[in-house]
Image 1: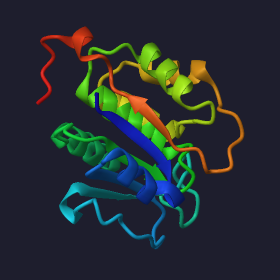
Image 2: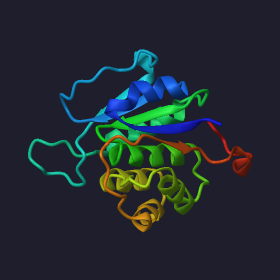
Image 3: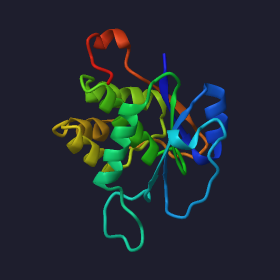
Image 4: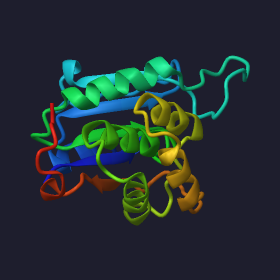
Length: 182
């Protein structure tokens, strides 16, 4: 079964190689230089420039925007699922877990938001999904507040040192027989 890999920046090459990832989403601040792992081709890498903040209007920082989430949803839906999707941010705790939830729901809209949030918490006791990304994803995916509520219910993750990548399994395909994967 394929999955979504969530990683801090410092572990992306290791995670890509170990799990055979060929597609990657980067959620990084502007001018934050990093090297794309060689196993990820440039055309299979989505770069979203944003800071890890939950509200707009914070000086020169770039808050997550609706366009960022639209691009994420489009990229996730185009992912062939032949290998894991790697999603990373600086620490792998806030932006990337939020993006992983949004990507999963964009592929499997029938999934219960609460079950997905619980699966995230089981995969990572540290994940604290970025609130703004979750709110935008909830709206664009027409979750009617269910994703926001589910993430609120799992609460803030434990303190992290930014060195705890994890695997978020996709829902069991048998549960979603008849679900379009296009």
